[in-house]
Image 1 (cartoon, helix red, strand yellow):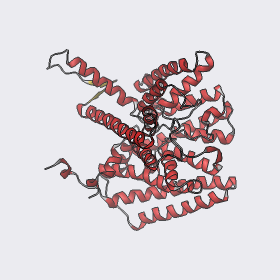
Image 2: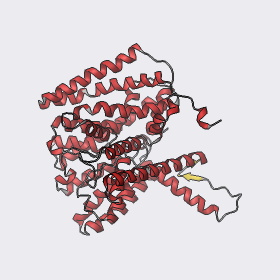
Image 3: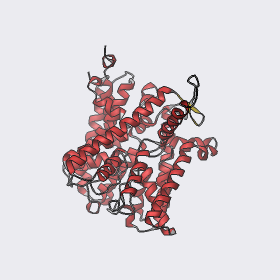
Image 4: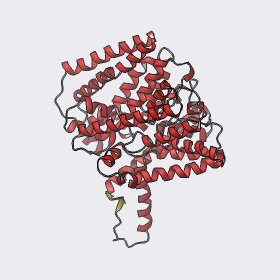
Length: 474
């Protein structure tokens, strides 16, 4: 009997029940863009957002009322819900972009928003302010985690909530109750957003600009008001301030809460924080050598490193003219990403450290007797062989998807290998940096490849593969 024959299919009644709740939640969350469009006096978007609010609330909560479900979700159900919620939000969220872009470009923009990627086929200089706010707000919601929002607002405590939470942020349950944990993470998220807004305003951004950019910094998203991104301001003070908040967004949110409640020394002793700072220092040195060795060139070097490794995707310098060596370094940082439990993408620093630990153990096993046992440790945590295999499998799948996607883009578009790899690594790492490949003129096949990569990267591959696997459906 094959392994696949043992797979139990999803409970689609339960899955649809949870997706209906997410659709209703979308309607509730869209009330804020609706209010903004009213304040700005943009009637077209007032009508669009009002229509979305009414229709999604009616359909979503109406479904839950007339087709209730009391069954607990299995892990398979939770993975499928996690994947399909992001797809659902992106499909519905593409509607406000239809007045300015065709459907595929609108879907691209919405997926880029909710997955906190930041790649765009739109000229930011011609967007209405309501749409600017909506796409930045989408990144802010995506960074917080649609699943965590569902936990805190819609779901009751229990196994269902835990399974949803663990597919989004892992099994770091810091308060005993999953919903209490989700609410604690949201509090940290809100505090960083408020502090960032104040810092941006004091650094020289206008009130609306500061709002738009903090909504896309804390979720490490990268959408901007301007085609030049943060480079529009030509201000070292603003660039440095944005760098700090990009880094803060790439650090585990549960770690903030634990450090403030228990012992702040846990923050500075955290291995992921230490590794992140070390990588940023190394990257700043590398890019500062390229940009120049004066103090005024250190900030662009810091910014370039921070925007890549935190997977935010802002720019202060054009990316396309960079030497191939700098592009390759940027690709490495985009693949690594930030800490687990943060809004950053990539493979995450935790997995990088475990992979390095696996290489170390493999090396020493060749020098020691066969009966010697070498535990794979991460700080005080001992990683089991099963967990190490899972991490290695994820890393392998991540690179295979990146390689296949790059081959497709090279074949379809005819761009150089390094530029195509850069764009794919940016999409899969949910970064948003671009060498100029991503545009409205891109072939539809390439757009679909990048859309799928953003979806896979935001959800760390497995939930999407489970949702697409035929035997999960029947």
